[in-house]
Amino acid sequence: MAPLLQVQDIAKTFHDGPRTIHALQPVSFTLAEGEFVILLGPSGCGKSTLLRIVAGLLPADGGSVRLAGEAVRAPSPDVGMVFQKTNLMPWRTVLENVLLPVEIRQGKATPADRRQAESLLQTFGLHGFDGAYPRQLSGGMNQRVVLARTLIHEPRLLLMDEPFGQLDALTRERLNLEMLRLHDARQMTTLMVTHSIAEAVLLANRVLVMSSRPGRIVAEIAIDLPGERDLSVMGTEHFARLTAMVRRHISELSIQEDVGPGKF
Image (cartoon, rainbow, N blue to C red; front, side):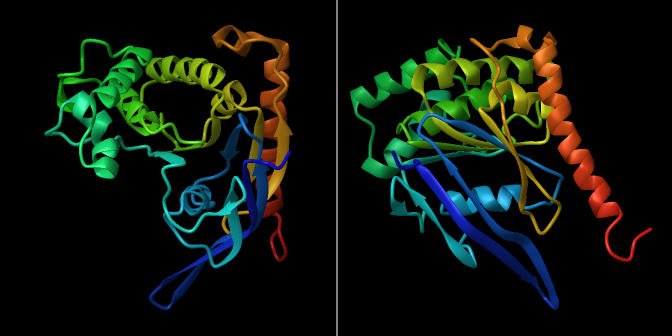
């Protein structure tokens, strides 16, 4: 069976006045249907740029992105994107925010759309908050609203750019558990960017380690945690070995970059 997502030789360069910034060297990888893959690497290595190219929000200089065999050249309802900032409309209620993509596509929401939105809010523990406004909710609750809004059109591919990076540790852990539960229930295909090694190992089936800019994939690590995952798995020896393996790849990369040609 062909993979759901195929990224082939994607490269990107930005021009900032006289400066040329090489963001991505040719990058290639695939995602199978139902797989959870995480991109991990230093700040500025091109992870977010790569995610935006996959989403069709940014053109690549070379290479191709294909979703279910079709070329991705523009945003598609088959791809859902969650950013670090919640970007909710402050003048719209929680329910109205969730229904926004439906209204943009259809002109207005149907009763069936409202029922689906209410079901998603209940899934994310927001039952009873449909009439609230974003300013009345915590950061973690607002991020749940964003997830519900992203999933309202049932995308085949979910892209997440450090979605929990601005949250406190406890809220982040709770949302990680919700992502695990949601992924198991819906078998979503997910590509996520994070800086947290522990979060990557807890959530992913595979971790792709990227180098510093210009970004390229330097390691691919299979995460073979047994059974259903919850926070208790983080205390196991196997989890510790996997996090150490990921950390070793990142540390080796840092050493190679520090001791490169002409460096001592």
